[in-house]
Image (cartoon, rainbow over the protein chains, first blue to last red):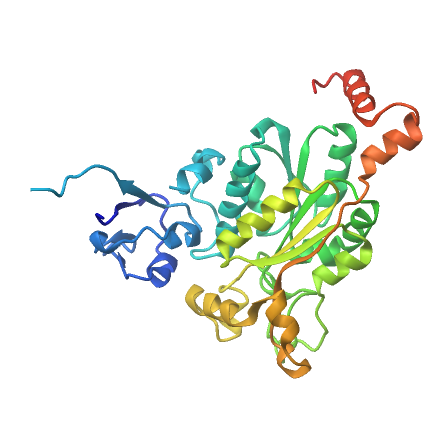
Length: 73
Length: 288
C-alpha cells in the first residue's frame, strides 16, 4: 500500500506566528520562517492528522491530500 | 481539509481577527463552525448573539444573522429573538464574566425557562479585554491584576450552576480537545431546549503571564494536565480531585421547550404544536 501524501498550505495573511501548530505537530513538519510565519519545512513527513488545522486559531493552515501517483518512475 | 469548511462560514474580509496570537477563542470559533456545518443549517436560519468581551467578538467574523449586545445581556436578547421568530436557531456566545458575573441572572433564568437556545460559555478564567481583572471563575490562589496576592474567592462551577438552574443539556470541554469539542457543540445545537456548554479557553496574555504560563504552549500543556474525562475524574479521591476539572456531558435529558409550551398552553391548547407554529409564523409574515 502506498503511503498517503499531504500538502500543507499556510495563508501568510492570516498566520500570526503563534507557534501552536509547530508545537502540536507530532512529526515536527512545520517551522517558523524569517517572517515569523509558519511554513512546512518537512512536508513529506506529514501524516495528515490535522492537528495543526484544529489547533490553528487563525484558520491559516489547510492540509490537503495529494491524489494520483506523481512518485512513480 | 477542515479549514475550507470553517472559512465558508466566516466573513473573510474581516479576517485576521483581533484575538491575540495563539488565543483559544479562535480554536473554539473553528470548532463551532464545523459543528454548525454538520447540522446542515442554512446561514440565514441561524442567529448568533453575544455580549461584551473577547469572546463576544465572535459574531463580527461569522456570516450568520449576528447581534453584538450589551454586557451580560446576550441571553436576554437571544430570548427576544427566539420569541419573535421561533424558526431561527439561536446561539448565544458569552465569556465567563458575561455569563456568570454581569449576566448571572439572565443565565439562571434562561436555564429555568428552558428556551431553545444554545449557550456557549468561553471560559478563560479572567476578564481579558479590560485588563485582566479576576472573574467569578478565576481559580483559587490565581493572580489577576485586581488580586495581586492571589484570589481567595471560591470559583464558580458553571455546569453545576446550570444543572441547578434546570438546564436540560449541560456539558464542558476545552479548546484543546478539538474533535471532541466539535461533537459536544453539535449535540448541544441539536438539543431541543436550553443547552449550556462551558468551553475552557486559555488567555496566556492576561491570565498566563501572571501565573507562570506565559506562552500558548504552556497554557495548552496546563489544560492537558488538569482536564480529565468524567469517568476518570469520578475514580479519583477527594484530595486528587482538587486541581482537576472533569470534561464531557454532565446532563442530557429530554425536556419540554418553552416557546412550544407557551404556544400550546397559552395561545391555543387544542391545536397541534406544528400547526400553531405555522399559523404563528404566517401571522408574523415569516416563511416556515
